[in-house]
Image (tube, rainbow, N blue to C red):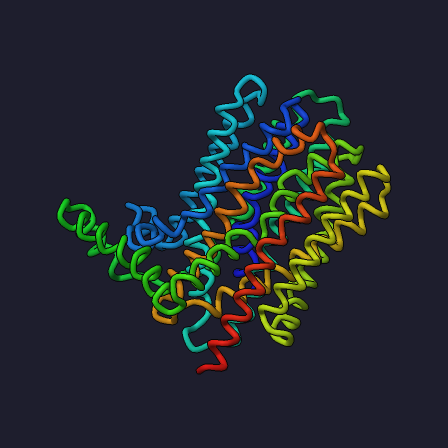
Length: 433
């Protein structure tokens, strides 16, 4: 469980860099909300990482795979990419070298999305094939590790940035990234202690992929197995009309939450909260609430059913967004900030569990991994592509955060309408069966 916790942390920590830290860095260097919002487009790579998953799964890295093991070799390679990108960030000024800053942020995002593929595989392989209870506990521990890497890693990063800025250092974000490098190095030392099963087929797969004929054959097979067959099976099982309704719901469900989340740290700074206060309430308190209610949310989702749980979660997400409008109208009030963050993380944790449960029930068992990856990617694409305009929306509203958060609350309505339609259709199908 400790190994799996570490792997979860390594998966969640890069989100601190390209989400929280990059957002505040750009904002505090004087860039517009619109620019900060569209910088979030780099998260789009997470929606497509399943496309190169077969390549990472089969190709071994020369020398490194032999010395460290197939999975750990890939993770180390992606960690090196993140490490080197941070070294470049340390040298850059965000206002003068914005394209380079975003470019290296994109490299971090690609490396992070790619390492998630390998981390999930290595996590699963830590348990024996028949150890179902260990597998379930490992999945829960992985989620806790991810949130720890993101929330606690963000809190530590914000504390360091605030401390260095208080010392009067002009380039305090660049200095903060040096401290982040140390944290990454420590996690990689822990990675080396994780055992890995040996793979005997890697060299044969390498030989086939290096030949032109083998490459074309594998590419065609990969396209069919990864995209075409799972989608065809999905629409065959659900029908075109219900299939499109499901995809529409998956795409739209977390749009409002994503719009709010993309701009939340910018909002906190604008109404007067320091980086340390954001770290304590948004990251530290948020970590505790998220962990607890991720576990409780799973129990509720099982008790009330995934569709009903999703409906309640959607209303809860909209309600907590309205609380941030209230925070804007009232001003900097710490207890209200803490309450809003706590309830928002509670709703988000519950919604995530219900959402994962829902799409898990929809997948064809013959294509479990690929269909789940496709559905999850569609949800990620919706959140990433549309929510990148969140900064532009706030600027268009002349910085009226109250109206902005009210709009994000309304955004959940189309997905809930689709959910009502789906509940009726899926219920009728179950009764007919």
